[in-house]
Length: 341
Image 1 (cartoon, rainbow, N blue to C red):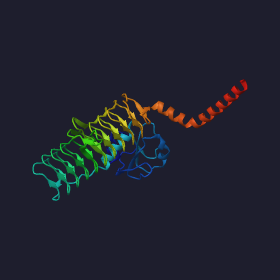
Image 2: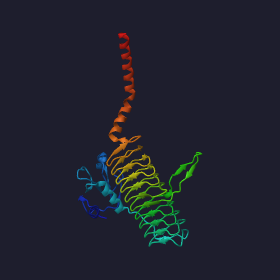
Image 3: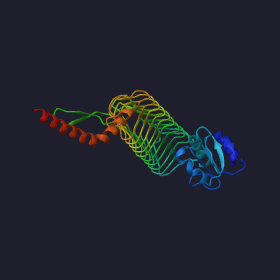
Image 4: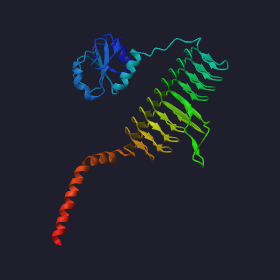
């Protein structure tokens, strides 16, 4: 692909020779002739003059490039599109492995791929061009939308609904029982049957070994465009809005609501029955114990407003000195009191 063609595909303004050939993508330090790279963070600007790339994707303020520049106001987004163009994901050929188990009442759309030892249960509906990798288990009555990819060892329990263009990575489990028990008078626990629905809407991506539980009643729902990292727990009855981002090891307790565009950083979590408003952000390793307003940014354990948390951290570091100063003041005050007696 010529650089001019790539610039047109990405909607970038080209500064440089459009006839140059682009064959791949690479990081700034690793790129060589034929590669396109990107600069989206000024932190790495000092490395730009040393790149061997044929072209760099950057914004209008970038200078000092030793190569052609593809100008855009969103370099990182353009870079993501360049990766899709130059390194497209290879999908397996349509077909059903003779080692797969497909219930005769299941419905499979055209051009579906089913790998060895995969299981598709009774009454399941699989859309067109779905990829089902080895040892995936799809329960009875499950529906999977077109162009969805189910990586190895994914488990979709009975009745789960998965939309179109969803990606579920290795070991994702959707629709297991929520953690619901009632305490008996003798201290033992009565299991509450978990018979609600789980709905994963279109264009959702869920990382490896994550789990999404079903509730006793009602539904657990993850809305369109949400992206979830590895090892994330979404408990029973949780409602997650559109375009939410959950980083690795996030844990969300039952009946919590996350509105659209919420971001939760790695190893953060929430107690049950809290509400995070649209665009709220939660810092890494933070614990949300009460509602967060729309646009709020919280951090800490328990999570508080980010500005308050920063002040708490600063004061915490000063506590040993404050304690010494206080002890000194107490000693001086005691000496004054003694002299006045």
